[in-house]
Amino acid sequence: ATPTAIMVGTGLGAKRGVLFKSASALETSARIDTVVMDKTGTLTKGEPAVTDVITAGIDEGRLLALVGAVERESEHPLARAIVGHAKSAGAPVLTATDFRNVPGHGATATVDGRRVLVGNRRLMAAEGVELGDLAARRDELAASGRTSVVVAVDGHAVGVVALADAVRDTSAAAVAAMHESGIQVVMLTGDNEATARRIADQLGIDTVIAEVLPGDKAAKVAELQAQGRRVAMVGDGVNDAPALARADIGIAIGAGTDVAIETADIVLMRSDPLDVPVALRIGKGTLRKMR
Ligand code: ADP
Ligand code: MG
Image (tube, rainbow, N blue to C red; front, side):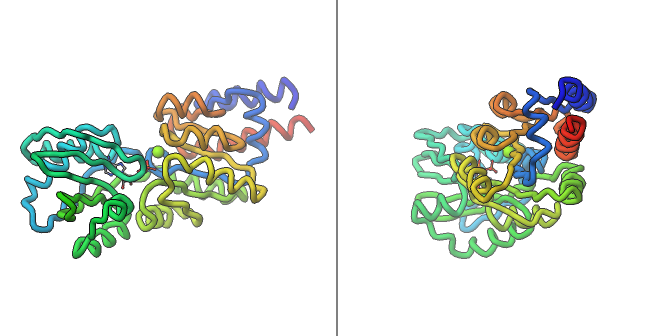
């Protein structure tokens, strides 16, 4: 593109808080045919809140005290929500030792002499914990779009904590605008398949890649590229940075982590998913002007 077209494109973006970090970011945007969007914090607000606590053979206050103790040691957004809930429910504050974070799975620690596990099905499977009657409840909650984590004490599943994270107001409109421009939209998430599918349905997204480990997001982007797609990745988290770097264009949500913002080619200062199609359209306009 000509320097003038680049200046115009960059200026148009800046007015909307869409920051193109380079001329090539603007030019490559014009050629994107696939947009991969992280779920948590990108399509959703990234502010999960506890909606349900299901117990099996344990007092709810005791369950929340044990889980709260483990999650107090974690920086995961789900952990913060669970700690907040335990506190407002007035659960006793216990101390955790031997805390271990298991990326993409959950966390474990010793509390009151008991080994407490908090996390997804995969963590429970890896630790040989059977869900028993809780499995059906967990599946129901997931099918309703909630993220549910299982709690196990000394190898026995004793509860499920479900959390909801509201979708951003403009996520569905952003997906529709991209579809109108012939762009395929893919949801990429570490969350459970059923939960992700339900939220994708609400937003009109047909392709879901779920239960992806934090370290594998970039490989999923590379697989799409190997199919000949030109991929923009949109994300907010530390987890997303390698995928943002791997994609033809990395787009960071302005409210996201510093690493994501530093790695991206484009930053959406307003954290508005609708600015994704806007950025791609500005790219196309810039390219047209060079012909
Ligand atoms: P996301 O892509 O949604 O950020 P992560 O890769 O961070 O997901 O986590 C994937 C899943 O692992 C979560 O949906 C949750 O089930 C489980 N998990 C991870 N960390 C924790 C934690 N601290 N407490 C409970 N569950 C967790
Ligand atoms: Mg995220």
